[in-house]
Image (cartoon, rainbow, N blue to C red):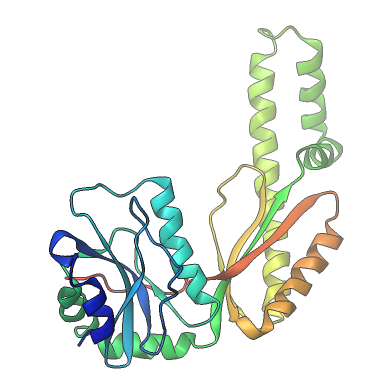
Length: 264
């Protein structure tokens, strides 16, 4: 059954709303009264409980479309804020059911044991993302020093009129992109090896930018975040002036959990 206090708090507006689901958490998680989810105005977060598990939900108008960038951001913020204090199984953006009773019957009751087991495995852990991006001038200098063809094409582009240099410019661009891809493979392998020394689970992500050097997610114990920070700091020092490094987290375990959707 849904938690009585949470249900009563939303009973007055539920007839004119639908229940939007963010993720699954242990039943003892309490909602932050200051937390806000998607919608305009942003909606309050409630907890619907069933047995050992619960769902983070909010009530939104069924008539207003969702999918704006701010909605995606709000969805992630609700999940990531929870990940720092409790295990959370994220649902894909856009999971909506008719009301809190449907949250219980179509999701929590149907998959209770599966979700409870997954939450136990995630207990104390969260996702962290390690991102590295090549400095544009530094990586270009590397490529020109390492490739005679790149250096030759660069000179040809500089010396010829713009129209006449078109083919050389295209060839140079392809060569640079291929060289960065090769460097990315080598540098990602180094980062994965360093992270692997901590015993964390690592998932290599597809690059989202042409100068991405490293883009990996890892599932690690929140208590060992300082160890992750140390590893990323060591990589940053080794690649100083060449790659700009960042560590993001704790985050919900998007890369490591596949959560059942309502009515699946």
